[in-house]
Length: 157
Image (cartoon, rainbow, N blue to C red; front, side, top):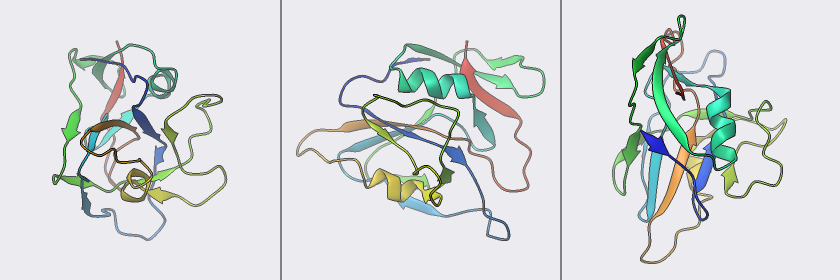
């Protein structure tokens, strides 16, 4: 699938993480009215750094799903999951992704540098809701559950 973040669209960006000794699932939250969330990674998949950087830069991104160990393409026309108002969204926990440069980029929401990790539900609340309009927000974070093997990576073709 081809995607591109445009003006007025948001990107939530970070490394998926789990604190030591904490439960592996952080529950779900309800997608708010007026916000469309596109989670780039399926459960137990990673998002490649180069894809995250391309999204920050508003580049056209042709997505694919690769086998993580071999880089073999498993789905050449990968389509990420879209959540709309009132749908249940997994509330992943994110940490800052220092490898991705966001200098000068607009519409980026990320946990703070050196700060605590943040839950996706809390980061989504930072998106301004516009009366009568839907705002699209891409979510670029690894979606692995603690103890599970990350088998796939969402990547650029």
